[in-house]
Structures are given as C-alpha cells and as structure tokens.
Image (cartoon, rainbow, N blue to C red; front, top):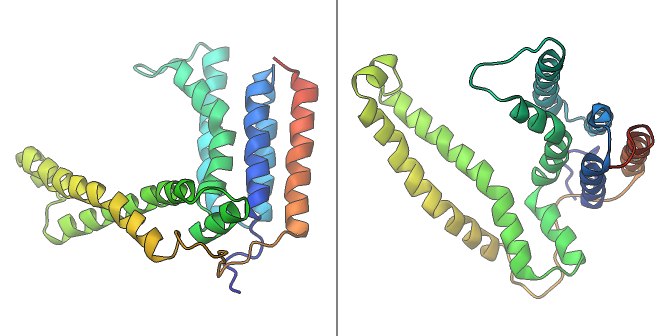
Length: 233
C-alpha cells in the first residue's frame, strides 16, 4: 500500500471536522469568536503537513479580518465593494478550509469510504465527478494559456488591438473542454470499476491512527470553546 502523505487524516476524520465546523459556524451567537475555528483548522493542517494550503488561507483571512476591523472601527469603506461580502467570506472561511480538505482527498480514498458506507454507486459516481471536475478544468485552463503563449497571443498588444479574437481564443477551447470534461470523468470512473459489484479497495492508506485522534481532539476542543464563549443563537 502506497501513502502520499502519512500524516493526512482519514476520510471519516475529515468529515467529522467538516460537520463540526459547519455546526459551529451557524450555531455560534457571537461571530467575533469565529477565529477560534480558523485557528483550530490551521492546527489541523499543520498536523497534516499541508503548509501550502496554510500559505493560501492565512493571508486571505488576515486581509479580510483587517478590512472588517477597519470598516467597523474607522468607517473604512471600499468603493464598489460591500462590507457584507467581506463579512460573508470572513465568516465562511473555516467552512471553505474544511471543505477544501475533503475535496482534495484522493478519489480512490473517497470511493472506498463511500463504498464501505454502502452508498449507492450512482451517488459515488456523482461525487467523484464533482470532486475531479474543478482540477480537470484548471488543468485545461493551464493548457489553453500555454497554447496561447506559444502562439504569441498573450501579449498586451494582442489584447489591445484584437480583444475579440483574444477572447475567442480563450472562450471556444474552454467551452469545448467543459462539455467533454464531465463525460470523460464519468467514463474514467466506469473504466476504473465504479460499477463493479465486488468490494472496492485502494492503493492509498486510509487507516485511522494517532493523527486522527489529535485532529478530532483539536476540533472538538475548539468547537466547545467557541460555543461556550460565543453562546448559541
């Protein structure tokens, strides 16, 4: 059995963290204690050695926190940008983080976990296609950018002199790739035996261990602290 990241939580642990994060976000009365959940999720990412994700979310959350604090304290406003959207992104960031950890899990681990839960195969197929759709489209966008760069279509001169053609060079390939992506992912899942009646396995380890106990302990502690200090709605 091969393991990509031996510190990564099992699928069950990730779902428990996601559920507690959702309940904590929507049940807490005082939203000013929401950074508690954010800190807990950052600790869980540190345990899993997922520092790249932390580098993405920590600056994002800090910027939103600063803008929110300035808007409340000094009546700081950004023209054309509502404070409501700042609050919504700031408030929902912990859920985005927990969901990110679930969605970026290997499709093999997800399918094995759902098979053990006796989930219908049609639902498993839909979940796998959904989880892999965005990464596949991102890869397609990267391919379009590289193709345009090789043909010298990404220069500022082309954007200014031929904006319609430049837009067309991006739009048409993306539309065609988006149409074919879902079909290709569905066919890939079928080829890999998603419809097979036998018990499914995986090349990746999804065993529960001390790391999962640490992760659940962290999120439960943060969840209880959040509700005790922030109260219920």
